[in-house]
Image (cartoon, rainbow, N blue to C red; front, side):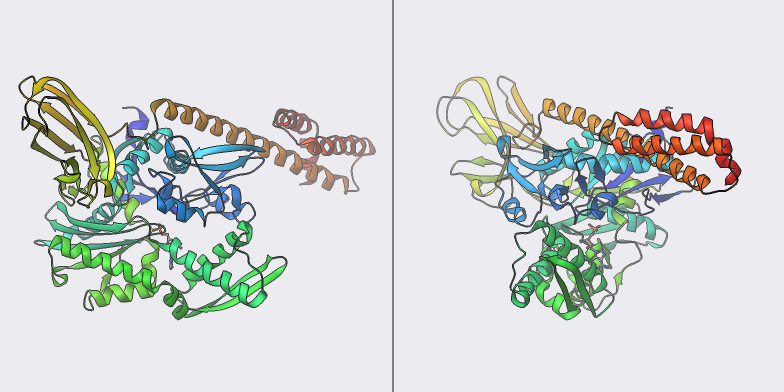
Length: 613
Ligand code: AMP
């Protein structure tokens, strides 16, 4: 077995933070993998400067100084059209530029090494995924090629496929796309499996950075069955941050008579301070937001109480509870039948959210025993191990997931005819007989929609195809349409005319929002170029630092009294030459020059320097 076949990781590709985990066969447990900064979650953030590309913590840490070129929230863009009202609204708050590309695809514009770069959301997500893969590879000391990637339960078909494309660009084969709450349920199920007797109804409340998902599961022996899922692809910690930012922009306007709303740098700095304050308010009753020289040299300082934070976000918190209620209604389950309520996602730490949830469940204690930031990656890693034939000792769990949105086709009168209602267990295959609507038809259009509305135009068109090549038939002639959803939640629709056996089908892969294979290939090549550039940059930075360090050491030796005048002369001229070389620093061509000179210096002076160290 090739070494790279040994590891299949689980990746929680979050809106704000991502997390990677692996099943450790020898220890019989999941390991959450820390990044090179020692953190177990990594910001889903990419930055471009005139010298280099930065990912994760490094990107987030410089965001305030370089807001226009620091990209985050790719998950909010992925699989959506530019004209989507959600994108139009978000666009106002992003410090980076988003424009409409070909086929209404949103394109992010940044400046990298002095040149304009256009990136699609898949490309940015691929960079985050590449980083997660590299974090895992560094820890496992082995190539990683396969992963289970999680998405919000409410992600539609095109958002799921765009995520698979992003993984492909990152050099990862997606073993399966699973829903985030389902992954959390696996982690929870694993935790509880020893003392689970009979059926248990588990409610997963997952409030993250950008998305909100709730799901109701039933655990029975080794089977985890999703009963219902509800959610909002656009509700989470960032919305709470936005509310705070808007609140303080107004306060700044009122108190200092200046408007910072058009200044990305000031907004970014304020947002960072608000996010920090929000986290503090989860354990303290008040905190002070302080930003030095926020705008035009004016400092900003303001006390914010937990009560005020709750007040400005109350409608959003209440929205969360409505979603909880809707999920139970859909599952036709009374809240008293829920055995455990499990908190997942960083924003589930907010005390008011916990209080409202506890009140909703009539005082029930909430389960906080799995780490809310890691539960999703944890479950994804278990699922990855379950799907890897060669990995042994994985707990025997079986997962029955559901489809998040109804799927159907249009019938006469522009009505949505639902083929697979939402919350149907997947994989699933449903065939239905349809009749031709007019006389003498020899072809029909089969269109595929997702959504809950009865008027077809209110739903989302996923794709369409023609079934043709049969002789003209009278009105009412039967045709058979089949909708099938695989384990990834991905849909294939086929249609058949039985007298001729003519058949046509579409896997909803070619719809307009998706990248074409040529486009994917181009982005992969681009991603490889980025990798080469990153490597070159690191090599140069290392050479530059090493030479600089050597200069420092030589200068230290020059301060000593007990070196010969000949040595002093040689070292002094070496210091001058090295310092001049370091000043050149304006292209990658210098790397070898630095490295060569460093070798030369080493052979000349290592002995001398060693004597003084
Ligand atoms: P996730 O997507 O699950 O990683 O959640 C990230 C979100 O959780 C971000 O919006 C964070 O600001 C938020 N978050 C993390 N810790 C806390 C906390 N202690 N209190 C409130 N929000 C938090």
